[in-house]
Image (cartoon, rainbow, N blue to C red; front, side):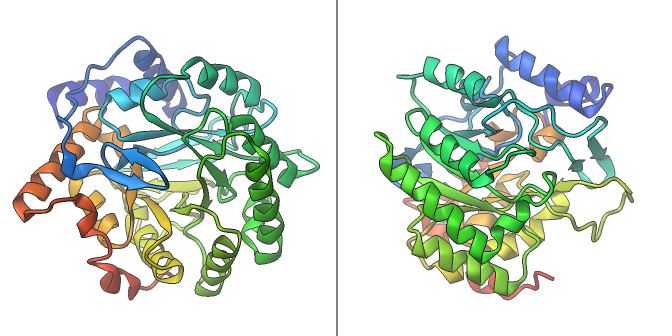
Length: 357
């Protein structure tokens, strides 16, 4: 970590986590911080779902909830950025406090509850960046009090298809009551059928990903894989935050989803399971505990085409993406790789054999 990152962390950690998050968004809007972006390297390019990613590292959804700073995030060195989760109507989310740092574990617990400004505000911002380079995905969700949650996802597809490089259907947040039930096969069947029909009727048809939870057993993963394949989605994102508190050094009674370093092992094992179930041709983005080039590489070995992070940057600072990308470049050069994608699945057997419960 650079001296600038250490100073920034000290300053931001003087505030409560949600205030610190807001300050970081404001800083990016103002053109700060100026991070050392790694030089582009052709070996890191990944072509996936018809999109050309300059490198395989992305910013996960949850940071830029309202599509305020996607271009600033790309400027930090990310190969792509995912905004959201965005719901049709604005909603305040759950009562504060609702974000908690577990500094001994490089982890965060959040129970935000899809707080965001809604479709209208996000669409205005995304429409305004039309014509700019860079891959920006849009993560869509349902309002907490919606009478038709599947309809909320349909509206999200129709609204953001013209503006999104790809769409992510988020049914795996633990902070909206009943949302994870949509991962059950019967509900998932209806959801994905209607989502893909909405995509088919759109004038622009971006790739569609499904974001799943890490807290799933083998039979549930099999059902999800079967539905994803049957409905011909473009890919899956593995995974969202976990409800598990196993292995934490810093005990916490706070409810919500846990992200960061403790999520790495389980999310990577679930990723490998999904790669085995879906086969070699389905796109998979790995997220959960990525905080270094080594952890990013391990996700790829387990079956990920691309990786994302968020919590890692809270602890390591805004130069982290550039440092990870530089580390990937060094690895590719050292190993004589023509493409970083050659690494994918090389650790599949090892990760696929690890327990997930």
